[in-house]
Length: 183
Image (cartoon, rainbow, N blue to C red; front, side, top):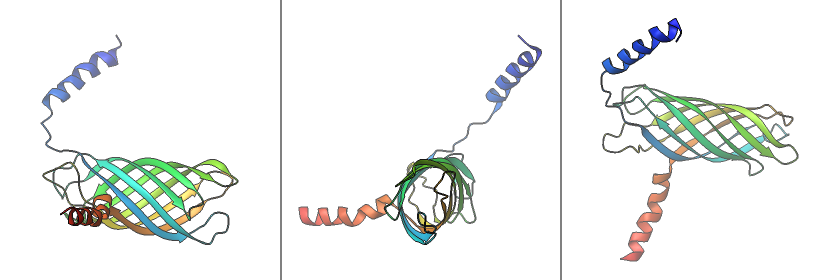
């Protein structure tokens, strides 16, 4: 056993045992993303964005706490591409119920004539995302701006502006209609 291991092992054990219990519970959501922007495939013109995004944020006990966690998303640009990716999201509380969420990650894009290509994405979200004290699921509604940069031959460069609407809110009209018909 090396000297570093002899020192670090007991130190790590001591820190772990001395650390206070944290009451933070993960908060997750899944939402529909819809919007538009510039940078359509090959033309540099406008595009329509449609997608879904989900994340899980950790280390948050109340609305005024920061949080960090992974996200995954799928999207299409004007129904010409399929894009799937993921990365990390960092929640910065501006107000208890209206935080900023910064996200950075990568994606794979399948576009006609180019095949699969890698890319990088960054997103800035602002909207309602209050801490849910009664469940692990939190409702999310807000606006986002996203930059997508392709690393392949398609030379993808997109700026997208849009809305993220929680899938639970999208489902409510259908649930209400079902319940009305059933009675």
